[in-house]
Length: 116
Image 1 (cartoon, one colour):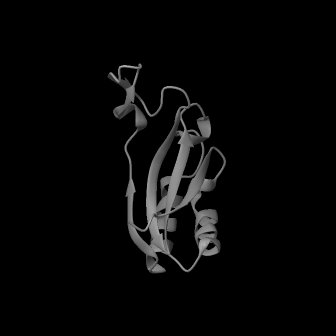
Image 2 (cartoon, one colour):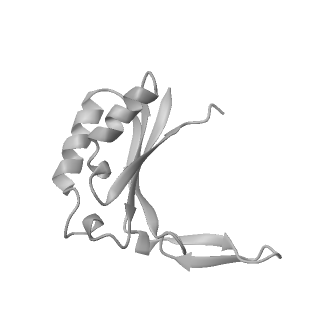
Image 3 (tube, one colour):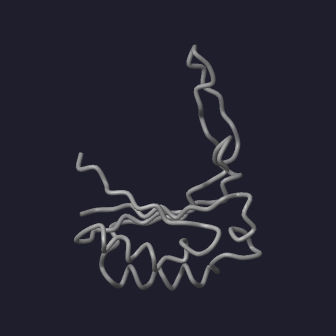
């Protein structure tokens, strides 16, 4: 079964910045381990959320407005993701636990991929 591991952070948490959280080396080591295990279907990392934007419907007329940053309200962002192919949710959970993205200041969301 295929699962997405979404590596999440929060823009107001100093642990997600240069001052703390997992180091790039920890992410590189995890990437090497999960790739060598043969479960990675695809993966990507995203640039800083301040460099992106969000399109939202702002009113009952459906007018779409662009706002900067990851989300206007929550300030949580996806830093990257893995698509993995494993036997079951328990295996996906084990990989998510190993990810440096689950260190303090972040979390890993596990979502099964829809079959269509």
